[in-house]
Length: 415
Image 1 (tube, one colour):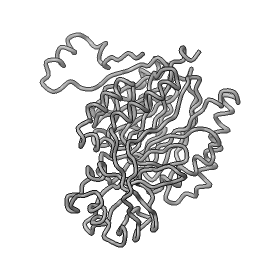
Image 2 (image 1 turned 180 degrees about the horizontal axis):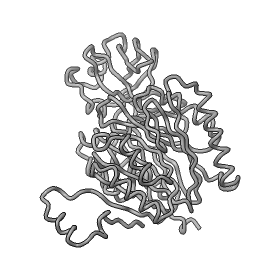
Image 3 (image 1 turned 120 degrees about the vertical axis):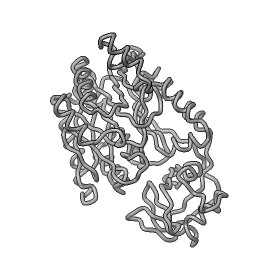
């Protein structure tokens, strides 16, 4: 169950009348409260101070101790948002990142800010930002995770610490997601991990993370969250491998660039394998014709980010000489996602809401296959909120073209 209302519902009638008379479209500013106690605020207004004040008011109303923030850099500057939160909600801890689209209570959106507030009565959180990923040793990250575990256990006790999950946000242009995800997972023991790589509205220039007054790129935020609310961590994708193989024969692993497949120019060989002309390759082409790699008996997507002038291809995931990729055949995205959500619903005995991390390539593919509205509506009716990513984290793996999420059940139903 959820309740939704606009921020200005309590404003004087004359103010609302003036806004209704305005010829511009209605602003998507709203508050949504869920039965599990979580509360989501969204806006497409570029006023960071106004949004921070709304967050402060809602945090006071539900006694929230922590907030997750997802924001479009095309709408708001990360430093301005961080400063506004420090000024208007100084007692509220928070962590967040820039996006490649948002998932609001109204469905798939672009150009929004989204805040998810966690009430202190049901959620205890410990978080840390790890700076300078490009020069950080992975042992350092594993040590930070171990320290977070001790900190959270000291606050909530051993019993409640069992009901803990981990979130991470990572700079989606850092080339470090695989190593960072592995290092985090190594320090978690059996705590499930999910997360998303920060985006920048498909500009591929700079992504930004914010945490308790800090604003940084080339960084990661790690959060441990203990809760009494029943939850389930899951992932879903919509592709199956074919027999068409591409072997990486020349690459730049440090920058995730493939120069040759099967000893042929990468773009030319990829285009020939999927049946299109090299000069017509676009992000939509890569989203519609993903490649996958087999790891431990399972296939994982290794999505292509873009083509360069010389025909080399940049990837969203780690790549190296000798890696064998298979061209994948997409399945029906709507039906695959619906089936995954149905399975989660059965496991939890009902879904109250879902925090989701959805690859931007799924969004592009949904538009290309004309199912964008169907996916958006599926997210809306299942109370999914989150953001579009440049990659997804799931347990020990960094993934592409995948939806990873944590579903929260109804506390009363669980009892």
